[in-house]
Length: 352
Image (cartoon, rainbow, N blue to C red; front, side):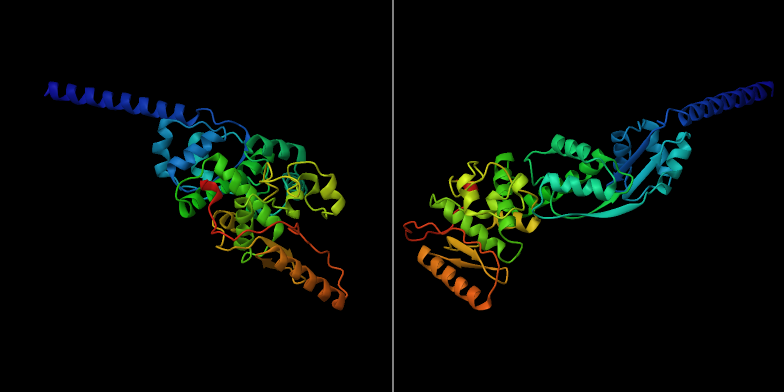
Protein backbone atom coordinates (compact mmCIF):
# COMPACT_ATOMS: atom_id res chain seq x y z
CA UNK A 1 0.00 0.00 0.00
CA UNK A 2 2.82 2.34 0.97
CA UNK A 3 4.52 1.64 -2.35
CA UNK A 4 1.35 2.58 -4.25
CA UNK A 5 1.00 5.84 -2.31
CA UNK A 6 4.67 6.59 -2.80
CA UNK A 7 4.39 5.91 -6.55
CA UNK A 8 1.30 8.12 -6.89
CA UNK A 9 3.10 10.86 -4.95
CA UNK A 10 6.03 10.72 -7.35
CA UNK A 11 3.66 10.88 -10.34
CA UNK A 12 1.94 13.91 -8.81
CA UNK A 13 5.25 15.68 -8.17
CA UNK A 14 6.45 14.88 -11.69
CA UNK A 15 3.18 16.17 -13.15
CA UNK A 16 3.48 19.39 -11.16
CA UNK A 17 7.10 19.84 -12.25
CA UNK A 18 6.27 19.25 -15.92
CA UNK A 19 3.27 21.55 -15.72
CA UNK A 20 5.40 24.22 -14.05
CA UNK A 21 8.07 23.89 -16.75
CA UNK A 22 5.43 24.14 -19.46
CA UNK A 23 3.94 27.23 -17.84
CA UNK A 24 7.37 28.83 -17.48
CA UNK A 25 8.12 27.99 -21.13
CA UNK A 26 4.82 29.46 -22.26
CA UNK A 27 5.32 32.59 -20.19
CA UNK A 28 8.85 32.94 -21.52
CA UNK A 29 7.58 32.40 -25.07
CA UNK A 30 4.77 34.89 -24.56
CA UNK A 31 7.23 37.60 -23.64
CA UNK A 32 9.75 36.87 -26.38
CA UNK A 33 10.55 40.16 -28.01
CA UNK A 34 7.82 41.59 -30.20
CA UNK A 35 9.47 44.62 -31.83
CA UNK A 36 7.90 47.88 -30.74
CA UNK A 37 7.91 49.31 -34.25
CA UNK A 38 5.33 50.72 -36.56
CA UNK A 39 4.82 48.78 -39.75
CA UNK A 40 2.34 48.71 -42.62
CA UNK A 41 2.35 45.63 -44.82
CA UNK A 42 0.25 43.74 -47.33
CA UNK A 43 -0.69 40.13 -46.58
CA UNK A 44 -1.04 38.43 -49.99
CA UNK A 45 -2.97 35.39 -48.76
CA UNK A 46 -4.55 33.95 -45.62
CA UNK A 47 -2.38 30.95 -44.78
CA UNK A 48 0.09 30.23 -42.01
CA UNK A 49 3.31 30.12 -44.04
CA UNK A 50 2.51 33.38 -45.86
CA UNK A 51 1.57 35.09 -42.60
CA UNK A 52 4.80 34.11 -40.83
CA UNK A 53 6.92 34.93 -43.88
CA UNK A 54 5.28 38.36 -44.19
CA UNK A 55 5.85 39.10 -40.51
CA UNK A 56 9.52 38.12 -40.78
CA UNK A 57 9.96 40.26 -43.88
CA UNK A 58 8.55 43.24 -42.00
CA UNK A 59 10.82 42.86 -38.97
CA UNK A 60 8.60 40.75 -36.71
CA UNK A 61 10.73 37.69 -36.01
CA UNK A 62 8.79 34.44 -35.69
CA UNK A 63 9.73 31.18 -33.96
CA UNK A 64 8.92 27.49 -34.33
CA UNK A 65 6.24 27.66 -31.63
CA UNK A 66 4.46 30.34 -33.66
CA UNK A 67 3.60 27.66 -36.22
CA UNK A 68 1.63 25.87 -33.50
CA UNK A 69 0.11 28.97 -31.95
CA UNK A 70 -1.40 30.28 -35.18
CA UNK A 71 -3.48 27.11 -35.47
CA UNK A 72 -5.53 28.38 -32.54
CA UNK A 73 -6.12 31.94 -33.71
CA UNK A 74 -8.33 33.62 -36.29
CA UNK A 75 -6.06 33.91 -39.31
CA UNK A 76 -5.87 37.40 -40.81
CA UNK A 77 -7.43 37.66 -44.26
CA UNK A 78 -5.67 38.93 -47.36
CA UNK A 79 -5.22 42.70 -47.23
CA UNK A 80 -3.37 45.65 -45.71
CA UNK A 81 -2.42 45.73 -42.01
CA UNK A 82 -0.90 48.34 -39.74
CA UNK A 83 0.94 47.57 -36.50
CA UNK A 84 1.27 50.60 -34.24
CA UNK A 85 4.29 49.41 -32.27
CA UNK A 86 2.45 48.93 -28.97
CA UNK A 87 3.96 46.57 -26.40
CA UNK A 88 2.15 43.24 -26.04
CA UNK A 89 2.82 39.54 -25.53
CA UNK A 90 2.96 37.03 -28.36
CA UNK A 91 -0.42 35.48 -27.49
CA UNK A 92 -2.14 38.84 -27.62
CA UNK A 93 -0.18 39.89 -30.71
CA UNK A 94 -1.27 36.88 -32.78
CA UNK A 95 -4.76 36.70 -31.32
CA UNK A 96 -5.58 40.31 -32.29
CA UNK A 97 -3.65 40.49 -35.56
CA UNK A 98 -6.77 39.90 -37.67
CA UNK A 99 -8.28 43.07 -36.16
CA UNK A 100 -5.46 45.30 -37.36
CA UNK A 101 -6.53 45.89 -40.93
CA UNK A 102 -5.87 49.46 -41.96
CA UNK A 103 -7.60 52.05 -44.14
CA UNK A 104 -6.87 51.87 -47.84
CA UNK A 105 -7.14 54.08 -50.90
CA UNK A 106 -7.24 53.48 -54.63
CA UNK A 107 -4.48 54.84 -56.84
CA UNK A 108 -4.33 54.74 -60.62
CA UNK A 109 -1.17 54.14 -62.64
CA UNK A 110 -1.77 55.64 -66.06
CA UNK A 111 -0.47 54.04 -69.25
CA UNK A 112 2.25 56.10 -70.86
CA UNK A 113 3.41 58.01 -67.80
CA UNK A 114 7.06 58.01 -66.70
CA UNK A 115 8.47 57.09 -63.31
CA UNK A 116 8.88 60.82 -62.57
CA UNK A 117 5.20 61.46 -63.28
CA UNK A 118 4.10 58.38 -61.33
CA UNK A 119 6.14 59.21 -58.21
CA UNK A 120 5.01 62.84 -58.37
CA UNK A 121 1.34 61.81 -58.34
CA UNK A 122 1.85 59.23 -55.60
CA UNK A 123 3.66 61.79 -53.47
CA UNK A 124 0.78 64.20 -53.87
CA UNK A 125 -2.07 61.72 -53.40
CA UNK A 126 -0.52 59.77 -50.52
CA UNK A 127 1.30 62.67 -48.83
CA UNK A 128 4.69 61.04 -49.34
CA UNK A 129 8.15 62.28 -50.34
CA UNK A 130 8.74 62.07 -54.09
CA UNK A 131 12.52 61.83 -53.74
CA UNK A 132 12.15 58.80 -51.47
CA UNK A 133 9.58 57.26 -53.83
CA UNK A 134 11.90 57.78 -56.79
CA UNK A 135 14.85 56.29 -54.91
CA UNK A 136 12.73 53.27 -53.99
CA UNK A 137 11.71 52.91 -57.65
CA UNK A 138 15.29 53.12 -58.86
CA UNK A 139 16.37 50.49 -56.34
CA UNK A 140 13.86 48.03 -57.81
CA UNK A 141 13.80 48.93 -61.49
CA UNK A 142 15.21 46.62 -64.13
CA UNK A 143 14.11 48.54 -67.23
CA UNK A 144 14.14 52.25 -66.15
CA UNK A 145 10.47 52.50 -67.10
CA UNK A 146 7.58 50.02 -67.56
CA UNK A 147 8.39 47.94 -64.45
CA UNK A 148 4.97 48.87 -63.03
CA UNK A 149 1.93 48.07 -65.16
CA UNK A 150 -0.87 50.56 -65.62
CA UNK A 151 -4.07 49.90 -63.73
CA UNK A 152 -5.85 50.46 -60.43
CA UNK A 153 -4.13 49.52 -57.18
CA UNK A 154 -5.37 49.44 -53.59
CA UNK A 155 -2.78 50.83 -51.17
CA UNK A 156 -2.75 51.43 -47.43
CA UNK A 157 -3.06 55.09 -46.53
CA UNK A 158 -0.32 54.57 -43.94
CA UNK A 159 2.13 52.90 -46.37
CA UNK A 160 5.53 54.57 -46.55
CA UNK A 161 7.56 55.17 -49.72
CA UNK A 162 9.37 51.80 -49.82
CA UNK A 163 6.24 49.82 -48.96
CA UNK A 164 4.27 51.60 -51.68
CA UNK A 165 6.82 51.01 -54.43
CA UNK A 166 7.52 47.43 -53.34
CA UNK A 167 3.81 46.61 -53.51
CA UNK A 168 3.40 48.10 -57.01
CA UNK A 169 6.45 46.19 -58.23
CA UNK A 170 5.38 42.92 -56.60
CA UNK A 171 1.87 43.03 -58.06
CA UNK A 172 3.21 43.92 -61.52
CA UNK A 173 5.79 41.12 -61.35
CA UNK A 174 3.00 38.63 -60.62
CA UNK A 175 1.12 39.86 -63.70
CA UNK A 176 4.29 39.59 -65.81
CA UNK A 177 4.79 36.01 -64.62
CA UNK A 178 1.17 35.11 -65.33
CA UNK A 179 1.49 36.67 -68.78
CA UNK A 180 4.64 34.62 -69.47
CA UNK A 181 2.98 31.36 -68.40
CA UNK A 182 -0.19 32.07 -70.37
CA UNK A 183 1.06 33.60 -73.62
CA UNK A 184 4.70 32.64 -74.08
CA UNK A 185 6.00 29.30 -75.28
CA UNK A 186 8.83 29.73 -72.82
CA UNK A 187 9.55 32.27 -70.08
CA UNK A 188 11.28 35.29 -71.70
CA UNK A 189 14.76 36.07 -70.39
CA UNK A 190 15.64 39.60 -69.28
CA UNK A 191 16.78 40.71 -72.73
CA UNK A 192 13.64 39.38 -74.43
CA UNK A 193 11.40 40.95 -71.81
CA UNK A 194 13.21 44.27 -72.24
CA UNK A 195 12.57 44.14 -76.01
CA UNK A 196 8.90 43.32 -75.40
CA UNK A 197 8.53 46.20 -72.96
CA UNK A 198 10.17 48.64 -75.37
CA UNK A 199 7.83 47.54 -78.16
CA UNK A 200 4.82 47.69 -75.85
CA UNK A 201 5.75 51.21 -74.73
CA UNK A 202 5.95 52.38 -78.37
CA UNK A 203 2.55 50.81 -79.09
CA UNK A 204 1.17 52.50 -75.96
CA UNK A 205 2.48 55.91 -77.04
CA UNK A 206 1.04 55.54 -80.53
CA UNK A 207 -2.47 54.44 -79.52
CA UNK A 208 -4.72 53.68 -76.56
CA UNK A 209 -7.09 51.78 -78.82
CA UNK A 210 -6.84 48.15 -77.74
CA UNK A 211 -8.18 46.86 -81.06
CA UNK A 212 -5.52 48.79 -83.01
CA UNK A 213 -2.58 47.78 -80.85
CA UNK A 214 -1.87 44.43 -82.60
CA UNK A 215 -1.88 46.23 -85.99
CA UNK A 216 0.55 48.89 -84.78
CA UNK A 217 2.68 46.07 -83.40
CA UNK A 218 2.68 44.44 -86.84
CA UNK A 219 3.97 47.67 -88.40
CA UNK A 220 6.86 47.71 -85.91
CA UNK A 221 7.77 44.09 -86.69
CA UNK A 222 7.41 44.58 -90.44
CA UNK A 223 9.61 47.66 -90.51
CA UNK A 224 12.27 46.04 -88.33
CA UNK A 225 12.26 42.99 -90.60
CA UNK A 226 12.89 45.16 -93.64
CA UNK A 227 15.64 47.13 -91.95
CA UNK A 228 13.54 50.31 -92.11
CA UNK A 229 13.74 53.02 -89.49
CA UNK A 230 10.62 53.01 -87.33
CA UNK A 231 10.18 56.80 -87.68
CA UNK A 232 7.53 56.97 -84.98
CA UNK A 233 6.78 60.12 -83.04
CA UNK A 234 6.03 58.10 -79.93
CA UNK A 235 9.68 57.08 -79.51
CA UNK A 236 10.57 60.75 -79.00
CA UNK A 237 8.11 61.00 -76.11
CA UNK A 238 10.62 59.78 -73.53
CA UNK A 239 11.76 61.13 -70.16
CA UNK A 240 11.24 64.88 -69.90
CA UNK A 241 9.68 64.87 -73.38
CA UNK A 242 7.00 62.34 -72.40
CA UNK A 243 4.05 64.53 -73.35
CA UNK A 244 5.54 67.09 -75.71
CA UNK A 245 4.47 67.54 -79.34
CA UNK A 246 7.08 66.20 -81.73
CA UNK A 247 7.93 68.95 -84.23
CA UNK A 248 10.12 68.79 -87.36
CA UNK A 249 12.68 70.91 -85.45
CA UNK A 250 12.73 68.40 -82.61
CA UNK A 251 13.25 65.52 -85.05
CA UNK A 252 16.24 67.34 -86.56
CA UNK A 253 17.82 68.32 -83.25
CA UNK A 254 17.36 65.18 -81.13
CA UNK A 255 20.51 63.07 -81.49
CA UNK A 256 19.53 60.38 -78.98
CA UNK A 257 18.84 56.78 -79.93
CA UNK A 258 15.21 57.42 -79.04
CA UNK A 259 14.99 59.32 -82.33
CA UNK A 260 13.87 56.54 -84.65
CA UNK A 261 13.73 58.99 -87.54
CA UNK A 262 17.54 59.01 -87.46
CA UNK A 263 18.43 55.62 -86.00
CA UNK A 264 17.41 52.11 -86.99
CA UNK A 265 16.12 49.60 -84.51
CA UNK A 266 14.39 50.06 -81.18
CA UNK A 267 15.03 52.78 -78.57
CA UNK A 268 17.44 51.80 -75.76
CA UNK A 269 14.75 51.53 -73.05
CA UNK A 270 10.96 51.57 -72.58
CA UNK A 271 9.34 54.98 -72.93
CA UNK A 272 6.92 54.76 -70.01
CA UNK A 273 4.28 52.71 -68.24
CA UNK A 274 2.43 50.13 -70.34
CA UNK A 275 -0.87 48.29 -70.15
CA UNK A 276 -1.16 44.51 -70.27
CA UNK A 277 -2.99 44.94 -73.62
CA UNK A 278 0.03 46.69 -75.13
CA UNK A 279 2.29 43.91 -73.82
CA UNK A 280 0.07 41.25 -75.40
CA UNK A 281 0.12 43.16 -78.70
CA UNK A 282 3.92 43.38 -78.57
CA UNK A 283 4.17 39.62 -78.16
CA UNK A 284 1.43 38.72 -80.62
CA UNK A 285 1.23 41.23 -83.49
CA UNK A 286 -1.57 40.83 -85.97
CA UNK A 287 -0.55 39.26 -89.28
CA UNK A 288 -0.33 42.08 -91.81
CA UNK A 289 1.81 43.62 -94.51
CA UNK A 290 1.31 47.16 -93.24
CA UNK A 291 4.34 49.45 -93.13
CA UNK A 292 2.69 52.82 -92.46
CA UNK A 293 -0.04 54.34 -90.32
CA UNK A 294 -1.28 57.81 -89.50
CA UNK A 295 -3.67 59.44 -87.07
CA UNK A 296 -7.20 60.30 -88.18
CA UNK A 297 -9.62 62.89 -86.83
CA UNK A 298 -11.54 60.35 -84.75
CA UNK A 299 -8.39 59.23 -82.93
CA UNK A 300 -8.00 55.94 -84.82
CA UNK A 301 -5.35 55.28 -87.45
CA UNK A 302 -5.38 54.51 -91.15
CA UNK A 303 -2.92 51.82 -92.21
CA UNK A 304 -1.12 51.44 -95.52
CA UNK A 305 0.97 48.77 -97.23
CA UNK A 306 2.94 51.12 -99.48
CA UNK A 307 4.32 54.61 -99.34
CA UNK A 308 2.06 55.63 -102.24
CA UNK A 309 -1.02 54.44 -100.35
CA UNK A 310 0.20 56.24 -97.22
CA UNK A 311 0.66 59.53 -99.09
CA UNK A 312 -2.86 59.18 -100.46
CA UNK A 313 -4.18 58.74 -96.90
CA UNK A 314 -2.38 61.94 -95.91
CA UNK A 315 -3.91 63.81 -98.85
CA UNK A 316 -7.41 62.62 -97.95
CA UNK A 317 -6.86 63.63 -94.34
CA UNK A 318 -5.67 67.10 -95.29
CA UNK A 319 -8.61 67.68 -97.60
CA UNK A 320 -11.06 66.55 -94.94
CA UNK A 321 -9.32 68.75 -92.38
CA UNK A 322 -9.65 71.82 -94.62
CA UNK A 323 -13.33 71.15 -95.21
CA UNK A 324 -13.99 70.68 -91.52
CA UNK A 325 -11.71 73.58 -90.53
CA UNK A 326 -10.09 71.36 -87.93
CA UNK A 327 -7.02 72.37 -85.97
CA UNK A 328 -6.10 68.80 -85.03
CA UNK A 329 -2.35 68.33 -85.03
CA UNK A 330 -1.50 65.80 -87.70
CA UNK A 331 0.76 62.91 -86.89
CA UNK A 332 2.30 62.30 -90.31
CA UNK A 333 4.71 59.63 -89.23
CA UNK A 334 6.41 57.08 -91.48
CA UNK A 335 6.36 59.35 -94.56
CA UNK A 336 9.88 58.77 -95.82
CA UNK A 337 10.08 57.68 -99.46
CA UNK A 338 11.75 54.29 -99.64
CA UNK A 339 11.65 51.59 -102.27
CA UNK A 340 9.09 49.05 -101.08
CA UNK A 341 9.80 45.44 -101.95
CA UNK A 342 7.15 42.75 -102.05
CA UNK A 343 5.86 42.25 -98.53
CA UNK A 344 6.69 39.16 -96.52
CA UNK A 345 4.98 37.35 -93.69
CA UNK A 346 5.56 38.61 -90.15
CA UNK A 347 8.37 36.92 -88.24
CA UNK A 348 8.89 37.13 -84.54
CA UNK A 349 11.79 39.52 -83.97
CA UNK A 350 12.34 37.95 -80.56
CA UNK A 351 13.11 34.58 -82.13
CA UNK A 352 15.71 35.96 -84.55
